[in-house]
Image (tube, rainbow, N blue to C red):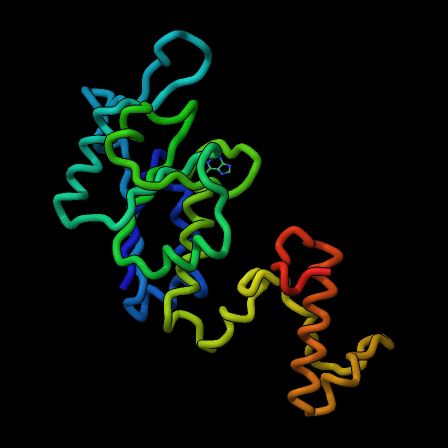
Length: 230
Ligand code: 6GU
């Protein structure tokens, strides 16, 4: 069982993603438990303030240390986290290897930033890992958290029906996946490669490997391992 708590500024953004398809099945099987916590409930004063202007000036608000610390400490009191992850464009870029590692943990806290980010002292005091989902800027960490949970959730053993399926994904062996086809074998005059209809398992495997290799060399030579290289 993997428990993921998500501390969010806009929890509504996370209502949809976890109640469908694979992640819902993971939850039904008690393999994954995602909980979204509204940072606003830890806000200060009548208006439940969670952000303030940045010291030193400049446009944009910063999430204050106190509401974040109060939320983190309350959640920690329910059980220790393996990692406290801050979703931020200046974090380590997410890749398959990192998703694999995180899928083996049992309790994670994801912190979603907003505006100009969170007070640096929260990063120093609590955060153990900082993750970005790519080199572009989102308006907040929630959608990035949804991407991270999807990437991790489908890797938890038992979540996918076909246990081998996650292992043949693009990136899983530093290679892109080969092309796939389904019925009909002839669609609008476009035929499925004969080899896939041959029933010859070893030859099909070799064809898929060659297709993967070719596709990776042309599209993503940067991810190829040396021994497979040109
Ligand atoms: Cl994790 N957060 C935000 N706000 N923008 C991003 C991101 C995260 N990863 C890529 N862009």
